[in-house]
Image (cartoon, each protein chain N blue to C red):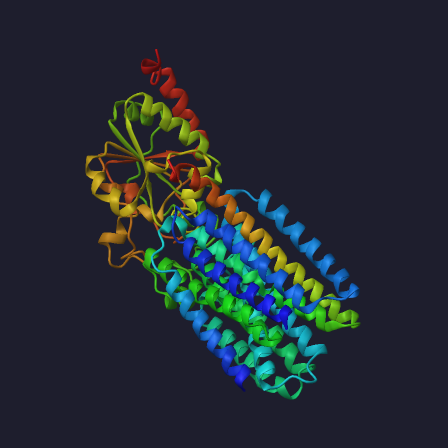
Length: 96
Length: 474
């Protein structure tokens, strides 16, 4: 039970943090922010890795884990790169 | 024990960096660094987990295979996609994130549910439900933005609510039954009915509202990740998923405000101007106009030549025609001629808030010339010429004056205040909202029919033949 309540606390505090962090966003940044947050949500790679680890010799589970890892990494890698491509364009003149 | 301490420390640093990353992404100056920071945070989190679980050789093999395939596909997609297709790509990535969470939950339910307690089973429920909706909803959103899917007529009737409620109930029944039989029918009932629910909820929504939906689905994928965190017992995953979920919700709300739409009406109201979505305009859209003035690029060029102050209003049509660079060239020419040039950017210009800024930045338009709506609106009365390029609903004056218009209340660019307005458009087809634009009939408005790029190139050659731009250079 304590593990659960600890996890729920983590959930609660994480949500509050998320609400707090994105206060005022200029419209210019809506698309990059969405895309960046989207990349972060691919952190579910952690779950995929854990699943593969737990699978042992179960080939079917290994396959599901690897598939899920592939999709999650596609999200993470693609998401961060595409966000970087977008933001690279703002940077050039933002600094001048 | 020392390994635990190490991995705990890595996790904490990762959470800290993620938080700083999300925070930094909301400011122009820090955004790029913040994005890289968040990427480092994820890499750290993965490293910490690998140290903690020490995968065996068999596991490494599968990890390598999955990572290589997913990572490579991600790199290729991210580097090759054109900037115009950004919203679709974000939807695609997001859908895959949802699918990953769904697969984890299904895998655990099928093969690892023997020792699972109630918490784990409920988490599997949530992860499958939200993951499936995220996946199928995102794919539908992508397909609609790409123009692969139209809005079927039945989805605009109240029948869709019946269908969706039925699917939701089916998913709920499956979810309730799942703890008794985690590997059998209930699991698949949840998977299938929530996938269909994702389709059923997203399909009726019109293209103009799609960015809001993608943002909301992005928030869902955070929730799915957090639920997957409960399934596999990873606090880091829970906190990161919760942060993305909450931040995505706020961003969705901010976008709704910018578009003057309420989230509820986006989700349940159906497409604006129902039925007109995606219908190839010319057929249905041209009725209703009686006083249209059209003019040639020559006349437009003459007006530009005499203007002192010109404002361009770029819309998605400009991007589709790949005309950003031609536009940039035209405005350089006008600047050399001594004309004051700026660009009016509606908060939802393009297909997503901020999308147009990205597209114009790609064409090297100076940042200072992009003027936000609130700043430029008071400037229109002293503007000589406004050129609307592939924008429609965001310049519709009905949004201010006609309370019966579906757009009523949406903040628009008040181009009707300018002395002369040219609207460059392929035809008189309706915009995303599927309704006629009163601007086109105003006496100071003239339509220049044609592809945005072709018209801009026409204007360029007309102006050059008039000798514009040469004067200053000599």
